[in-house]
Image (cartoon, rainbow, N blue to C red; front, side, top):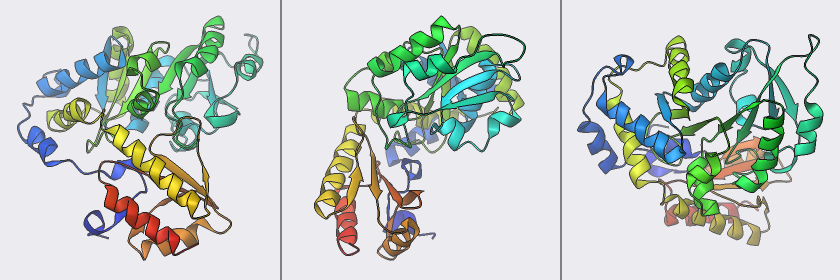
Length: 343
């Protein structure tokens, strides 16, 4: 396992990327201070830069995407408040039930295609305010949508949901872990996809290639409170400029190159389809390829590993392959060749 990064084509996730030499150099040269005191100049610069990119007044740097989303929920809600969320959203599906521990919010899980409920479904799920019902407080969205195959969701598709939320005085949080992928795929500025929401999280350690870290962005007052919750959750990282420098480099250098990952994912999907595999492609695909099988996903994963190809499961008979900056054209061809021997 120790040599996987050097010999395997690792398509399990875009979280497996390693810092580039230039990113490592930026980390080495980072000016640092104590961020809990607000004295780390590199962290301060990252937070200002990320807020600008996301179109918000301020942001706060945190260790992980899960912490970012949990801080966001804490900041929007009080105990028992109701959060409206698609049942396949990352916050509900992959964050270990953390909201039950920290915010103690109630999740109202809705359904819908491509990871999005309809405005009518959301409207119908919001109950009258009285002592018998939890207080409706927050709408949680996700873009790109992981379990919907990395689908990039346009502002036009989100906006009817936001309108319903506003009519009912709900705040709106966007899990934008891969929001840069969405913007590149849709050929829009990131701020077009965040302008209608009250808060947004963004991962620096997925497709953008930083080794660690996420940000939460919103109004200055909102982020001031979010810093309190970051402290509660143990997210104060002291001389964090070393890793914040990687985040700045990622935002500077690695957003536009996401198009390369998308192109490789599209080519991989086309080649697997030509081999006879069923590939589920979202309306606007990004860097994920979902392959539906007629046999166990675990079987395929084990067989591919023997050929030094690593992929993940998204269900008993579904594979997920994720392209990223550590997977080049040769890696894609090796993957296609391995699949061709398994069909």
